[in-house]
Image 1 (cartoon, rainbow, N blue to C red):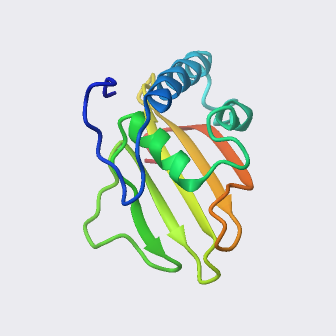
Image 2: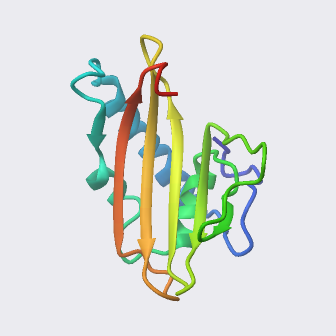
Image 3: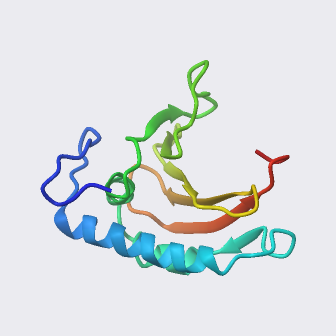
Length: 154
């Protein structure tokens, strides 16, 4: 993760404020604490962490706020796609990235996938999905989970 003095990549209109860096560090601590408790992938394959994420991406915040948080967590700038567009041929999703999809009605969704430290040859991922209505970039819903995937799922 970048420190306050480091330069972070930004999207077209996304700036990462020092307070966002602080929030990203705390989010990583919160998620790490939850992730450490997950020990049985058969029973805990999907663990809802929406309420935890809503502290950092609250309803009413913007897609830019969510993008800034992801950048502060060390993620790559988001891939931007239209509806039914696929990532470019050969695109390999980095361990920490997001995709912003813009729909014909100008609504947007941001989906982030963050690789977490896993155990027992399993992949642990933080999955975040936020949605905006129409041209208003304010987020109206946030869902998030820690997903445990075995080698066969990856």
